[in-house]
Length: 244
Image 1 (cartoon, rainbow, N blue to C red):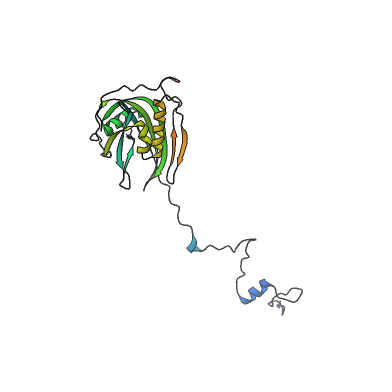
Image 2: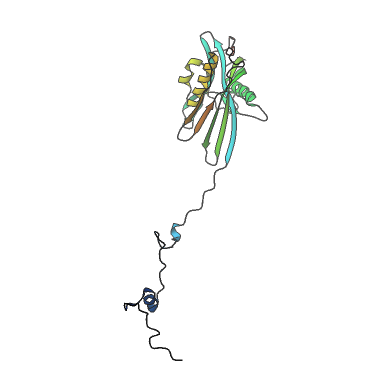
Protein backbone atom coordinates (compact mmCIF):
# COMPACT_ATOMS: atom_id res chain seq x y z
CA UNK A 1 0.00 0.00 0.00
CA UNK A 2 1.54 3.33 -0.95
CA UNK A 3 2.16 6.04 1.62
CA UNK A 4 0.22 9.28 1.13
CA UNK A 5 2.37 12.06 -0.12
CA UNK A 6 1.57 14.21 2.91
CA UNK A 7 2.26 11.55 5.62
CA UNK A 8 5.77 12.84 6.55
CA UNK A 9 4.83 16.48 6.53
CA UNK A 10 4.35 18.34 9.86
CA UNK A 11 0.78 18.56 11.03
CA UNK A 12 -0.77 21.97 11.00
CA UNK A 13 -3.40 23.46 13.18
CA UNK A 14 -6.58 24.75 11.61
CA UNK A 15 -4.86 28.11 11.14
CA UNK A 16 -2.21 26.51 9.01
CA UNK A 17 0.62 26.71 11.60
CA UNK A 18 2.73 23.71 12.59
CA UNK A 19 2.35 22.47 16.18
CA UNK A 20 5.29 22.68 18.66
CA UNK A 21 5.44 18.90 18.98
CA UNK A 22 5.59 18.39 15.26
CA UNK A 23 8.06 21.19 14.77
CA UNK A 24 10.44 19.69 17.41
CA UNK A 25 10.08 16.20 16.03
CA UNK A 26 10.71 17.34 12.53
CA UNK A 27 14.05 18.80 13.61
CA UNK A 28 15.13 15.69 15.57
CA UNK A 29 15.21 17.46 18.97
CA UNK A 30 13.60 16.09 22.19
CA UNK A 31 10.54 17.86 23.42
CA UNK A 32 11.33 19.80 26.67
CA UNK A 33 9.57 18.76 29.86
CA UNK A 34 7.08 21.45 30.84
CA UNK A 35 7.64 23.11 34.24
CA UNK A 36 5.12 22.32 36.98
CA UNK A 37 2.67 25.11 37.83
CA UNK A 38 4.42 27.78 39.87
CA UNK A 39 7.72 25.93 39.83
CA UNK A 40 10.82 25.21 37.78
CA UNK A 41 11.80 22.43 35.50
CA UNK A 42 12.47 19.18 37.34
CA UNK A 43 16.25 19.18 37.36
CA UNK A 44 18.77 18.36 40.15
CA UNK A 45 22.20 19.91 39.87
CA UNK A 46 24.67 17.28 41.20
CA UNK A 47 26.95 20.10 42.35
CA UNK A 48 24.26 21.34 44.75
CA UNK A 49 23.38 18.10 46.49
CA UNK A 50 23.01 18.41 50.26
CA UNK A 51 26.03 17.47 52.34
CA UNK A 52 25.65 14.32 54.45
CA UNK A 53 24.05 14.98 57.85
CA UNK A 54 26.45 15.33 60.78
CA UNK A 55 25.68 12.71 63.45
CA UNK A 56 24.57 14.23 66.79
CA UNK A 57 27.07 14.40 69.62
CA UNK A 58 26.67 11.80 72.36
CA UNK A 59 25.09 13.03 75.60
CA UNK A 60 26.92 12.48 78.89
CA UNK A 61 25.14 12.77 82.25
CA UNK A 62 27.19 14.17 85.16
CA UNK A 63 26.16 14.60 88.80
CA UNK A 64 28.12 16.68 91.31
CA UNK A 65 27.59 17.93 94.84
CA UNK A 66 28.96 20.65 97.09
CA UNK A 67 27.78 23.78 98.81
CA UNK A 68 28.53 26.13 101.67
CA UNK A 69 30.20 25.07 104.91
CA UNK A 70 29.39 27.71 107.52
CA UNK A 71 31.43 28.74 110.55
CA UNK A 72 30.39 31.26 113.21
CA UNK A 73 33.22 33.75 113.75
CA UNK A 74 33.38 36.66 116.16
CA UNK A 75 32.33 39.07 113.40
CA UNK A 76 29.50 36.90 112.02
CA UNK A 77 28.82 33.87 109.87
CA UNK A 78 31.33 32.99 107.18
CA UNK A 79 31.64 30.39 104.43
CA UNK A 80 34.69 28.63 102.98
CA UNK A 81 35.05 29.26 99.23
CA UNK A 82 37.78 28.30 96.77
CA UNK A 83 39.54 29.92 93.82
CA UNK A 84 39.99 28.08 90.51
CA UNK A 85 41.29 29.00 87.07
CA UNK A 86 38.69 29.31 84.33
CA UNK A 87 39.35 28.32 80.71
CA UNK A 88 40.81 31.74 80.05
CA UNK A 89 43.30 31.35 82.90
CA UNK A 90 41.65 33.86 85.22
CA UNK A 91 41.27 33.05 88.91
CA UNK A 92 37.61 32.91 89.98
CA UNK A 93 36.04 32.34 93.38
CA UNK A 94 33.39 29.63 93.55
CA UNK A 95 31.73 27.09 95.81
CA UNK A 96 33.55 23.80 96.49
CA UNK A 97 32.00 20.84 94.69
CA UNK A 98 32.84 17.69 92.73
CA UNK A 99 31.59 14.48 91.14
CA UNK A 100 29.91 11.70 93.06
CA UNK A 101 32.14 8.65 93.49
CA UNK A 102 30.97 5.04 93.59
CA UNK A 103 27.62 4.68 95.31
CA UNK A 104 27.84 7.97 97.20
CA UNK A 105 24.73 9.99 97.87
CA UNK A 106 24.83 13.70 96.98
CA UNK A 107 25.02 14.52 100.70
CA UNK A 108 28.03 12.25 101.22
CA UNK A 109 29.78 13.61 98.15
CA UNK A 110 29.20 17.19 99.29
CA UNK A 111 30.81 16.50 102.69
CA UNK A 112 33.81 14.76 101.07
CA UNK A 113 34.36 17.32 98.30
CA UNK A 114 34.13 20.29 100.64
CA UNK A 115 36.64 18.69 103.02
CA UNK A 116 39.04 17.88 100.15
CA UNK A 117 38.90 21.32 98.55
CA UNK A 118 38.74 23.54 101.67
CA UNK A 119 40.18 21.41 104.48
CA UNK A 120 37.02 21.99 106.57
CA UNK A 121 34.93 19.07 107.79
CA UNK A 122 31.21 19.60 108.18
CA UNK A 123 27.81 17.99 108.55
CA UNK A 124 24.86 18.56 106.26
CA UNK A 125 22.02 20.61 107.71
CA UNK A 126 19.67 21.31 104.77
CA UNK A 127 19.68 21.17 100.96
CA UNK A 128 19.90 24.57 99.29
CA UNK A 129 19.09 23.84 95.68
CA UNK A 130 20.09 22.19 92.43
CA UNK A 131 21.82 23.79 89.46
CA UNK A 132 20.87 22.01 86.23
CA UNK A 133 22.58 23.01 82.97
CA UNK A 134 24.00 21.87 79.61
CA UNK A 135 27.27 22.60 77.88
CA UNK A 136 28.97 21.32 74.73
CA UNK A 137 32.53 20.03 74.44
CA UNK A 138 34.52 19.01 71.41
CA UNK A 139 33.07 15.51 71.25
CA UNK A 140 30.04 15.46 73.54
CA UNK A 141 27.13 17.34 75.06
CA UNK A 142 27.10 17.29 78.84
CA UNK A 143 24.02 17.48 81.02
CA UNK A 144 25.25 18.43 84.47
CA UNK A 145 23.31 18.48 87.74
CA UNK A 146 24.95 19.98 90.84
CA UNK A 147 23.37 19.47 94.28
CA UNK A 148 24.13 22.15 96.88
CA UNK A 149 23.84 21.82 100.66
CA UNK A 150 24.28 23.96 103.73
CA UNK A 151 26.87 22.43 106.10
CA UNK A 152 27.89 23.30 109.64
CA UNK A 153 31.66 23.35 110.17
CA UNK A 154 32.85 20.82 112.74
CA UNK A 155 36.62 21.12 112.44
CA UNK A 156 39.65 21.29 110.16
CA UNK A 157 41.91 24.05 108.87
CA UNK A 158 41.76 25.96 105.62
CA UNK A 159 43.96 24.30 102.99
CA UNK A 160 43.81 23.18 99.36
CA UNK A 161 46.46 20.52 99.82
CA UNK A 162 43.83 17.80 100.08
CA UNK A 163 42.34 18.47 96.64
CA UNK A 164 43.24 15.34 94.62
CA UNK A 165 42.65 17.10 91.30
CA UNK A 166 44.71 20.16 92.20
CA UNK A 167 42.05 22.47 90.76
CA UNK A 168 41.62 24.60 93.88
CA UNK A 169 44.44 27.15 94.06
CA UNK A 170 43.29 29.13 97.08
CA UNK A 171 40.71 28.98 99.85
CA UNK A 172 39.34 31.63 102.18
CA UNK A 173 36.68 32.38 104.75
CA UNK A 174 34.23 34.92 103.31
CA UNK A 175 31.46 36.58 105.33
CA UNK A 176 28.08 35.25 104.17
CA UNK A 177 26.87 38.79 103.49
CA UNK A 178 29.83 39.34 101.12
CA UNK A 179 29.34 36.19 99.02
CA UNK A 180 27.35 37.95 96.25
CA UNK A 181 30.35 40.21 95.58
CA UNK A 182 32.97 37.45 95.88
CA UNK A 183 31.42 34.56 93.90
CA UNK A 184 32.03 34.68 90.14
CA UNK A 185 28.97 32.84 88.83
CA UNK A 186 25.39 34.17 88.97
CA UNK A 187 23.87 30.75 89.72
CA UNK A 188 26.15 30.25 92.73
CA UNK A 189 25.34 33.75 93.98
CA UNK A 190 21.70 32.72 93.98
CA UNK A 191 22.51 29.58 95.95
CA UNK A 192 24.37 31.79 98.45
CA UNK A 193 21.30 34.05 98.69
CA UNK A 194 19.17 31.01 99.54
CA UNK A 195 21.68 30.05 102.26
CA UNK A 196 21.60 33.57 103.67
CA UNK A 197 17.81 33.44 103.84
CA UNK A 198 17.86 30.07 105.60
CA UNK A 199 20.42 31.28 108.14
CA UNK A 200 18.27 34.35 108.82
CA UNK A 201 15.18 32.19 109.34
CA UNK A 202 13.43 33.55 106.25
CA UNK A 203 11.62 31.34 103.70
CA UNK A 204 13.91 30.44 100.80
CA UNK A 205 11.93 29.45 97.76
CA UNK A 206 13.90 30.66 94.79
CA UNK A 207 12.66 29.51 91.39
CA UNK A 208 14.42 31.13 88.46
CA UNK A 209 16.18 30.59 85.15
CA UNK A 210 19.51 31.99 84.05
CA UNK A 211 19.99 32.02 80.28
CA UNK A 212 23.27 32.81 78.60
CA UNK A 213 24.74 32.29 75.15
CA UNK A 214 25.98 28.77 75.85
CA UNK A 215 24.10 27.41 78.84
CA UNK A 216 20.68 27.34 80.43
CA UNK A 217 20.85 27.16 84.18
CA UNK A 218 17.97 26.46 86.54
CA UNK A 219 18.26 26.97 90.28
CA UNK A 220 15.73 25.03 92.32
CA UNK A 221 15.47 25.47 96.09
CA UNK A 222 13.63 23.04 98.36
CA UNK A 223 10.11 23.62 99.63
CA UNK A 224 11.35 22.95 103.18
CA UNK A 225 14.39 25.19 103.76
CA UNK A 226 14.74 24.10 107.42
CA UNK A 227 14.53 20.78 109.22
CA UNK A 228 11.30 21.90 110.91
CA UNK A 229 8.84 23.88 108.74
CA UNK A 230 8.33 27.27 110.29
CA UNK A 231 11.05 26.60 112.88
CA UNK A 232 14.30 28.41 113.52
CA UNK A 233 17.28 28.33 111.13
CA UNK A 234 19.93 25.66 111.63
CA UNK A 235 22.13 26.37 114.63
CA UNK A 236 25.79 27.02 113.89
CA UNK A 237 27.90 26.89 117.06
CA UNK A 238 30.90 29.11 117.44
CA UNK A 239 34.20 27.28 116.99
CA UNK A 240 37.78 28.62 117.03
CA UNK A 241 38.53 27.35 113.53
CA UNK A 242 41.49 28.83 111.68
CA UNK A 243 41.19 32.06 109.77
CA UNK A 244 42.71 32.48 106.34
